[in-house]
Image (cartoon, rainbow, N blue to C red; front, top):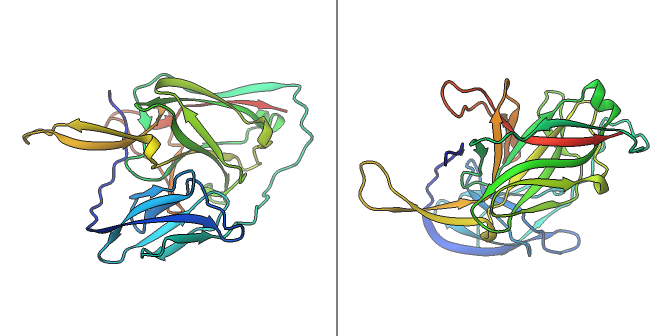
Length: 287
């Protein structure tokens, strides 16, 4: 099966494996699924549910960037120190006209067309995000009730994190709209996922909203396989971290890639003569 996979290669000279844990600087409690990425690369890992991680120490003392929803990112030298503390962010309320939720009217926007195209992690901890523009009709139905999207996974119970971002003045992803951890578990195979979001009271701001899927480089998501290369003998081993978020061809570029606290508009095409690629998302909105 064909997939669109943004693959980055980076070689690290292994000196030692370092194990550690990421914790809240105030409560001292472990932080689940924090991302740890080598500076100036997209290679890294995620802490597990208990905040534990394992990384390769690089001989040139490369730095790592540690980040997680609701916390300030930290850049530090990779060493034998096995405890990393992150400080909580102050939640920022941006330009949203707060209204009482009525739930008397609904609209459905977007789609998740069946397609061979999809967005994978490429071995990196990163976020694929789609921008939802606030139209006149959306302003009348600004609360997100449910989200639907299609995943494909070669492992059972693969996990991903759902994120929501404000748009800045340049139209780029900015701060998180909510600090709640929304971890989604998806089944093996190709499945349509319907997630209720009513309890989070997510309201689409005047500037619109980015909806993102954060890949998790964790053991539960690992899929090992073998492959061959043209012109080379034998089989090679590969590792993928599931799942893939399915997409489709659209008329304009609207997908953003977020990693290391930086974002860029993704303008890659599935084929040379194909249209821009879109994340398949369907939203039910209420007033």
